Image (cartoon, rainbow, N blue to C red; front, side, top):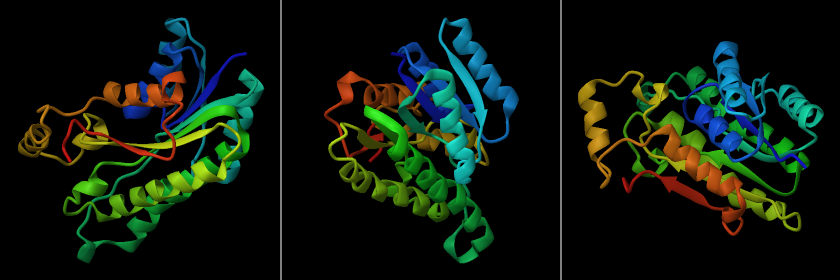
Length: 242
């Protein structure tokens, strides 16, 4: 039986590396994407070129019908769903005092409603013995100024993790959250000057930024046989920054 993984946010950044890594681990992979079809198809072609199996499916993660259709596509093409890695997300930075609440609503829609919509389908449709991996951020604990709109949504994702793990009792399905620290993605670099980047890179004891491949390796562990005893946890993959 082919083991199948759905990776949201699979067209770039951490999600793109998760697609590549899970395909290398032997999963057939559905690369979910919001709007950048070219990058999603690039990810699929890279998997195909390496001898794996993948397909790209467009889905707004906050649209429950689109999310259900993405799961339908995975089941139709590959026979079922065993792992879901929900890497899609959106960031907005602002001091609380200055925050446009319309911006908060937009981030909430993707990061919280989207996480629930994906988790709902995962809870209904992941085969017994599978795994759901959501993504938070180590900034929930670091409490950087201006990150409130983002950290508030990621705190909600963390709060959901143990609850859902308990709700899935009896099905041998693990539910965990990966919380990366500063990671060298386009989303991280956006709006930061070189001094800020270097300061953040120097903070972990390992004295560097994380890479998407670092986070994909953690995801691979949770999705695979060696991670089966980890359940209901938030893993802070951040090089020791907090």
